[in-house]
Length: 355
Image (cartoon, rainbow, N blue to C red; front, side, top):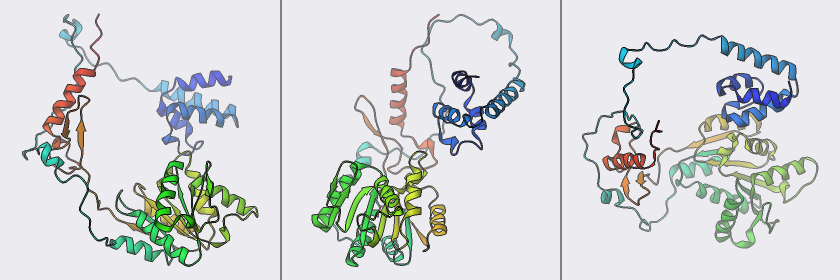
């Protein structure tokens, strides 16, 4: 069987069969779409084409051997359908019980939005806890967006710089690295901050360096080969922002290798708002690093969320009957939002094809 024939045969199979074929062959295969999964399977098949084709044909045979469900019995009316005029396709919508709570108005939903009044800054308990635990080991901070992760990074960097240690702050994107470079230059002073990305290299000997995670991984590779750059010998703190990228199927290995190759004398601070299993990450880091990794977790949102729906015609309405988001209560959808949903479907769904 040629590679083209094998590819066509794989494309004809359901995605569930491809996932069964990928078990034991492809890591994280459950994250890949069908096109991507076929490409990975084809690369893997080059190692043992006969065995791969044998497993594929076995699975296809099992699939074909499964008895198909009998067709539902037809009633006399179903055997002789009555002709009807063409009509628009309708969507069957489940009937949900309405809440007895009165729905909020748009003005109530918008009330309080805007720039809050100026207040004296007081660190939260979890922020102080994270900074304190960095004295004892590495730290994983898992808190909602807008809770103040940057404050922890700034204070930890300030302390490391005061001890004449190098600080490296990484982000997954060049644009975010440029933003942090501007922000930290205002906080620490432009002479104290440098940036290293694929496009920029400014003030590379500064005590606080901003870079993408890939750049840091490459620097650690070079250091392993005997090339010491950007004062890695005095590295005291590594901050990995948006560390949920460790779960990314394509780029996650960069975060893993960065953690593995990070010098033992440096503390690691991982920041994220969306790691699903931060305790597992902390345990793994503890198992491979000389110091324990502490988890600092905070679930209360400092900035509460409000959900609204903006129709293409410009109509804005609350999405739910309440100001907040009522998790687990789909029946709390706002009546005006429901009406706009139905209007949008009626305007966009294609008509049933005419015979």
